[in-house]
Length: 132
Image 1 (cartoon, helix red, strand yellow):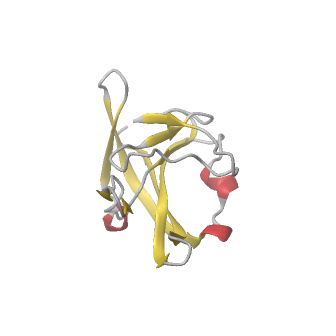
Image 2 (image 1 turned 45 degrees about the horizontal axis):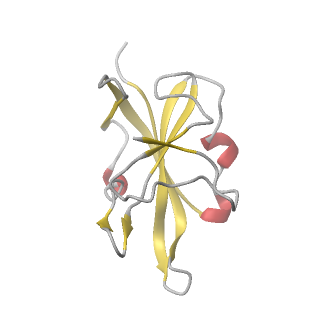
């Protein structure tokens, strides 16, 4: 996992390597209060399948494991999978720093726009810490 910030166009940075997940460094770490946002690619025409290629297979009740820089693995339970047109994504909710701890996996999806060479939608999976 690498740390990411905000790109020049105001959008969240996404790691260049499709095999890498990026943690949004201006938000909480996974397991801390608020939304910990992790971003990655579903695919890339040069690199192939991305780390979040199977995000559409995640459903409420599924488990996500996240390792930290010390090798400690935390478990999260999926509570929602949502999809919106990029212009309609609820960014305030997805990047909310308040409330209880939750993990948000964020990537592109929907139809692929050949003219713009990008997906039309954003997909988000929200998960909460597993266990007591």
